[in-house]
Length: 311
Ligand code: ADP
Ligand code: MG
Image (cartoon, rainbow, N blue to C red):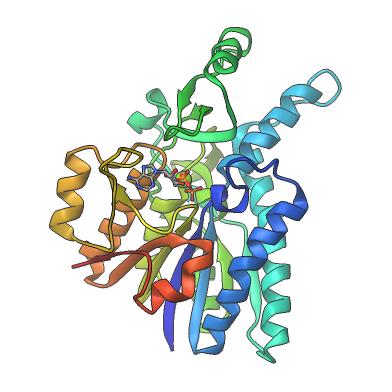
């Protein structure tokens, strides 16, 4: 049985322009779970991970507005909350889709902590976009009144940025490996994992949002996946993105990836971590990675859509 790690973007679950209602999120999740169940039916073992940028940002806003009556939660707790809410929606939708196909595959969602380095330079250079998009004027006002750092996200508007340290190790890796070897369909490392630091054997939470792309490539390597798929809002990566000479990419080899990264074709906090994560997996395993959209999962695995990164 072939094992595939599929990373679902938080921005693919609440798309740009959507408010993020449960109905909207469920409908986007349904789109990909239908295809994931089809994949399972064709003999793949699926390991799912997911992002949480828009969702964790919304929880932070809820916290902020409720401050007069309810104590605020630190970011690691907000990350944990999104593993629960999105993990639940994914597990429920996927279980139903598997049952409709008379598949007996068991689904389990595992709360996942991820060790990061407390001295990671990311703590002084926030790059992870969270929450909704604002206009430039709104963003300046938020910076002034709330002291949050705001940056422009790929011409889509301005968003808050928070530190995004590099994931080093999954705390629950052994449990995940055991369940994977029993054939479970797993939902793990949501939101890139809950960031913790390991000081002399004791785990402590730390306020950050790990980019799920990097954690997902770590998962794909650790679980010896045969393929690694990153699902986002766009069906391919592009060079000269949003420029008149934009060119969608069907494939890149390792050298192309490195060259485009060096030329700054992929911005921090959005497409760059995807290309870097795909590159890590391909370089370390000599297997293929694909970047595509939620609705193109099957054609991408069949080779007719998406950006394929190969050794
Ligand atoms: P996700 O939640 O799936 O991780 P991100 O917003 O982090 O989504 O990253 C995907 C987004 O990156 C795309 O929707 C697109 O707007 C943006 N993007 C920036 N540069 C590029 C590029 N060169 N090619 C394709 N998309 C790009
Ligand atoms: Mg992202």
